[in-house]
Amino acid sequence: VSFLGLIIMLPIFIFVAILIKLSSKGPIIFKQQRIGLNGKSFMVHKFRTMYIDSEKNTGPVWAKKNDPRITSIGNILRKTRLDEFPQLYDVLIGNMSIVGPRPERSFFVNQLKEKFPYYVRRLNVRPGITGWAQVMGDYDTTLDNVDNKLKLDFYYIENISIWLDFKIMILTFWIMLKGGGH
Image (cartoon, rainbow, N blue to C red; front, side, top):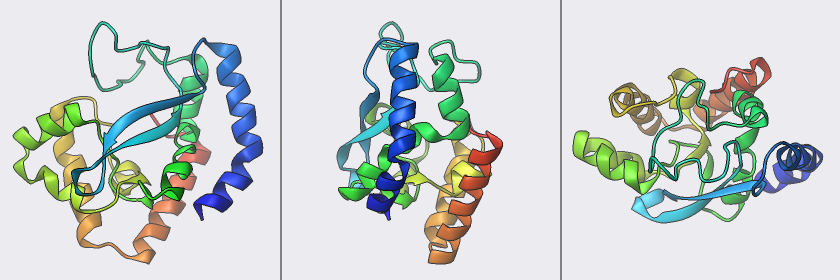
């Protein structure tokens, strides 16, 4: 599925790559270490939506609404969730799944494990490009926002099925069409 998705999306990838390159300096693809299945670190790939060195002065921080670090093209990519599509490569090489809890950076995983000792349960399944928490919840902006997202992730983990995955994919597609991403 991921290989087919990469082939089908190639013309859109090329178009998005040109837009990113023309709109701001820096690489087209943003790579970042994330924590995945069984707590193993892996490199995630996304279209770059922020200016380069956006966390240089702050260190790791979550994106927020109207974040000044996000480029104009990046804002569109995030709303349509097109910034996530390079992760089909991560699915192809086995680091991610199409559906599952979103992978997080180790900096935040360590904080979340302290605040929510049961957080590590999320690491028992392969992370996904989209998930139940992404289609049913809000975007995380602080540690306090994570509680609801965790409940949604655990609902998914406890109810994993091909039918739930299809429902999540359909809801994700609908959010993309509406431009309802963050």
